[in-house]
Each structure stands twice: as C-alpha cells, then as structure tokens.
Image (cartoon, rainbow, N blue to C red; front, side, top):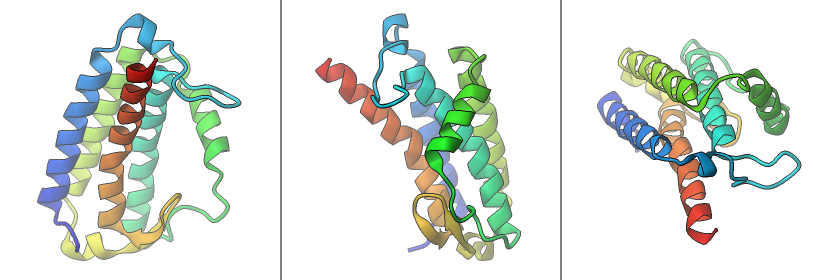
Length: 159
C-alpha cells in the first residue's frame, strides 16, 4: 500500500526528532565505544557520520528516480562507499554531524513536499532493497537511523 507525502513527512519528522534526541545524550565514553566490529569497527560517531552520508546520498538518488533515472548503479559496493564517506566526514565533530543531519533532513522534507502521487509510484533501484517505488525508498530511509540507534542502544544494554 502506497503512502502519501503527509504520512512520509510525519515519519521523517518523527525519526529526525528521535535521532537527534538519541545522539544528543550520548556520553563521551559512549561516543568512542566500538559498537560495530569488523575490519574497521564503528563507534556511534561513525554511525552518525554514516547516517549523515546516507541522508545526502539518498536525497540525490531519490531526486534521480523522480526525474526518471534508474536509481542506484548496478555493482554498487556499500562497504567501499561507506569507507570513503567515513574519510570524507572524519573532520566533523559530533555536534557538526548532528547539525548536518538536521540540515539534510530539512532538505529531504522540503523535497518530499513537492512530490505528486505519480512521483511516489516511480520505481528505481535502491542499493539494498532492489527495485522499489520511491515511496518505499523514502519509508526505508525513515527506518535507517532508527535501526542503527536501536543497535547502539542494545550494545550499551549488554556492555
């Protein structure tokens, strides 16, 4: 079932507020804890940089789909992209990242307000979910930061 712009805007706003509230109360010790392990472990600051990066890149992707583009390129490698984005955003503080997230989310919401019902049904390739309508891509974005915050929250409950 398709969602309308008002519903998507409500979701974008609610998750924006939750994301900012969550990251705003982390302590200095929590900001530096490795919450995702692997070749390049991520702490909450890395996760926030990833959320900021995704917000901007998805806005570009969504605009492309609206304009009739195919969406994410075939052969997109998320790990390589994420590593490059971590490097690009390395110099920003946690507060600067939160400010950038707020700026990008406002830009996303302004753009969503311009969408027609026909725009929302346009299909493109999401880098993870495959070929889906634009409204589903936007809905998935509303869950992105929420899922990462949930992972961080669970890490600190167990740690």
